[in-house]
Every structure is written in structure tokens, then in C-alpha cells.
Image (cartoon, rainbow, N blue to C red; front, side):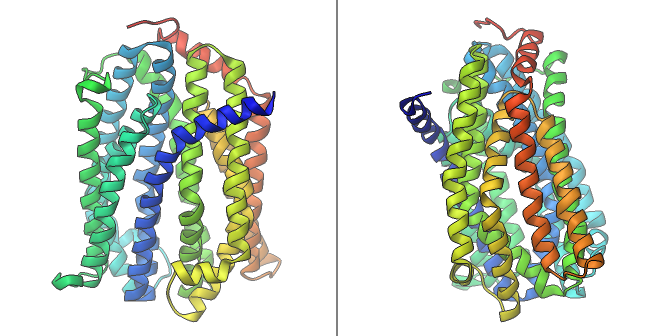
Length: 458
């Protein structure tokens, strides 16, 4: 197509994506501040929240998985005019998300110390990590509602409201982490506990404000009593692979972190810092493009326009690689000063952090491509392909190759660097082939017809 067509799509992408980018900038900044605050406390504190976050990302993945189902159905039903189905799908996703968050509350209080103690970390890191995990798991249901609610609204084309809510809540989180974690302005010096309390406060605030936004009269979304089994089934079918994809990513982190801890706490802390630096400078753009791709592809399919859906998907992927990929390469080039600016800690931690920042920077074009194309597939209700890409990439390369290179080939920590890079290259190639040659448009049309969203006007 002509470049003018690409330019028009890119303008629409930016209109949808920039609020998500702004929102994610504050979210990643909040996590970066957590790393900085805990690094000022001790290396053990950095390891503590890093290990606890391995478990904390399981509720995150459930929320993102159900959010993926919500944004797919919401975007398709918005374009097709099936507003009753949209209300049903969103309410079902929120209800299921709340219920699935409850077991995490119990897990944090009962098994927190055991879970963190599975890693060969120092006693101080285990104790602090167990307390932090219990605190943040206490608001897992609210975290699910926040994630699902934001994506439900984004699917309707409203990316501004979630931005306002999340920027406010994350600002509260950032301030709370610094004040309570370090005892600033006369507040008690709570250390890791203070960082956890700031996060739980933000979770509750975000969930409450988004529920008000979703069910306000102007949204066009109604609170209904969930009863449509077809929509419930589709929500699970679409969300389950998205959740499984997230679980695979988190499960792979366990052996990988254990592998790094074999080189000492400093190597693991450097990994946490280096990856956080990468996520801070590229994460917001990647998440914005992922959401924009889901909206554009989902709404095009809701209109019955497969050709436009495909074109929009490739346009998002190209823009993602050109921007996120370029920023990642600049990070790899200037990793040392960027890590020193955004990270903290002793010389050994910063050494490893710089190396991991370089690896993630060099991986950025591939990771950007994977994120962009995955968003398009999600908008088409095809979440199985990204799951398979993540499964094979994380266990085949991130863990498998890294372990082989470190322990069999004798490459040392260089093996872990190469394993990370190869994982993201593989994942990108996998989804690109599937998006180019798969039957995702047909699948989306079949699901819409099954739930009565084709030609709907209600």
C-alpha cells in the first residue's frame, strides 16, 4: 500500500497508544523507584523484592490474561455494535478476576517464607522477601480488577480514562515507596515493608477508580448478572492461553534466577536492575503498541474487514520495531551511563546490570516485533500462538540454552546473556510466521458468529 496509508494508520496508532505509553511510563517508573529505594537499603533488599516479584507476577499474568480476553471481545463487539455482549463479557471478566485473586491472599500469608526460601538467597533476603510477598498478595483481587478494567475500557477505544487513573495511582505508589521505604519527611523508616504498602495502596485505588469509570453512565457499559455461557466459554478460551503464556514466562524465571544466584547475589541483583532499566526506557512504548494493535485489529475484524486488520497489524509491528528497537539499540550503546543514572548499588552489581542492559538492548528489535504482532493476534482472539512462541522461547533458550552454555559448555555468565538474546529472536520469528500465514481472521469471525455479535445492533 502507499506510504500515505501507512502514515494514516501510524497516526491512529499513536492516538490510541500514547495514553497507554504515558500510563506505563509511570508504572515502570514506580517499579524502577522500588529498585532504587531497595538498592539504597541493601543488596539483600533488591534480591528480596526481585524474588518476591517472581511470585507477584502470577496474579499479574492472570489479570493480563483475562484482560486479553476482555480487550479482544470488547474491541470486536464495540465495532460490531453488540453492546449487550460487550457488557456481559466485561462483567464476567471482572468477576472471574476478583475470584481468582482470593487464593493468592492466603498463599502470601501462609506460604510466603517457604516460597522465597526455595531460592539459594541470603537469610536477610528470604525474610524480607516473605514479608513483602504477603503484603502485595493481600490486594491480588484488586490488582486483577485494575488490569482487566483498564483493558476492557481500552477495547472500546477509550485509552484516556485508564491513563488518568493509572498515572494518579502510580504517582501515589512512587511517593509512598520513597517516603515509607526510606523514612522521608518524618515518616517511619519501614524499608521493604514500606515499599510493599505503597504498592497495595495503589492497587486498591486503581481498582476502585476503574470500576467507577467502567460503570458510569457515559461509558455505555452496563453492570449485568453474568449468565451467558457462550461468552463465558469464549472468555476462558481466549484468556487461558494468554494466562499460560504469562505463567510460562514467570516459571522460566525461577530456574534462570537460580542459575544467576550461582554467581552470587550481585549477579542476580544486576539482572534485576539491568532488566528494570530496559523496561523503563522501552516498556511503555511496547505496551502501548501492543494495546493499539489489539484495538485496531479487533475493531477491524468486528467491522468484517480482514484486509484492514492484517494491514493494521503489520503497520503496528513496523512502527514498534522502528521505535522500540531503535531505543533499545541506543541503550545497548550507552548502557553504562544509563544504568548509573537509573540504577544504584555497588560496583559489582552495576557491572552485571550494565551487561544485562546491553543484552536486553540488543534484543529490543526482536522483542518489539514479538510484542506488536502478539497484540494483533490477541485482538483477533488468537492467543494460542503467542503462548507457544513464549513456551518454546523461554524453556528452549532462556532457560535451556542458558543452562547448557553455563554448565556444559563452560561459558560462565556469558551463556545466560546469549540465552536471553536467542529466546526473543525465536519468539519474534514464531509469531511473524503465524500472523503471516495463519487463519486467525477466520477464527475471530467464527467466535463472533457463535456469540451473536455479527451484525448486532443493541
